[in-house]
Amino acid sequence: MTAAGTNAPPAAGGAHSACGATILGVEGLALGPGERAFLREADPWGFILFARNVDSPDQLRRLAADLREAVGRDALVMTDQEGGRVQRLRSPHWTDWPAALDSARDGADAVRLRHRLMGQELRAMGIDADAAPCLDIAREETHPFLRNRCFGTDAATVAHLGRAAAEGLLAAGVLPIVKHMPGHGRARVDSHHDLPVLDAGLDDLDATDFAPFRALADLPLGMTAHIRLTQVDDRPATAAPAAIRLIRERIGFKGLLMSDDIGMNALSGSPAERAAAAIAAGCDVVLACNMTRAELAAVAESAGRMTPAATARANAALARRGPRDDADPTMLRAELAAITGA
Image 1 (cartoon, rainbow, N blue to C red):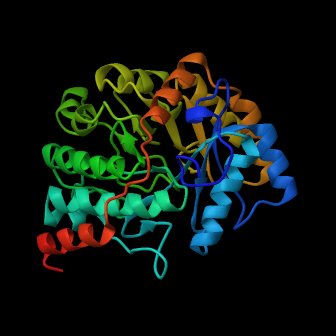
Image 2 (image 1 turned 30 degrees about the vertical axis):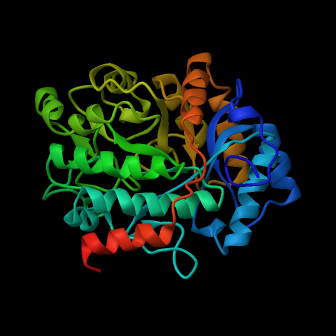
Image 3 (image 1 turned 180 degrees about the vertical axis):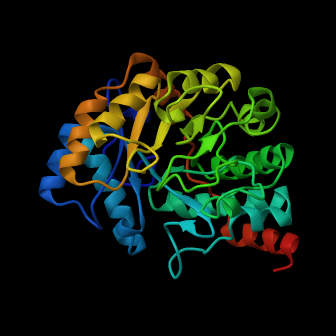
């Protein structure tokens, strides 16, 4: 068994130089020869799994191992397991978790325990990164696609509970991915379909939207937001060099920065053009989730290889990927029940 809980033959620690600057989705429950050959050639830094890739524990463990075997190293395998509407592993094999805004009512200790248990379930499947916590701030106007995925309605609460969620995942050996940088909570439209436009001033954003990300800027992985900050650039943050500089300098995030899914319609252009724009803006890797193999090939070619700086950030992130948590989940669930009364 590797540190990722699979039987794939990894390179030591998962470190690798000049991988493809991508995290790619895959087609189904298992890899066929054609897809395996494509992934070997594209050599993405990591993979993302969705419900279409999930059936049973044995199947999922096998898929995670096969993905790593395809690229010949202990590559990152991530998913979206927030709770509520956004969770790819569900009952009967896995726990159905509450959405962040609902979980928040039980306090930081409950949030930490839930995410530790969530992380244990993921790590046992060979999944070692989770696209959580969401550090956006919920507002009355926040679009419903996002609102209950936030931990609260003020920066301090979101930072406090986001830290608890991240600590829980890290305790289980799973890397948290903070999102959506530099803050998506003011969005009135769904970025899967349209580009949200935020016209707030930078001082206001500094005190609110940016604050939770600044408080958790020490975490290893972050994800951009497909939003347009009118005070910064006319382009979506993912494709705007000024917005990426803001994330790096004003917020102070030093970890590996991935784009949100470049297949979302908040972005314009072909998949290859979107990938090129994200890399040119300063994203370390491009996330491409729901595309044809031809589109993924174009994205991989356009994104190119990771820069030395991106590779260093990637290796630093992988170094924080801990071993599987040996704490008894039954005891953790009892502790959680004592807090929540459930």
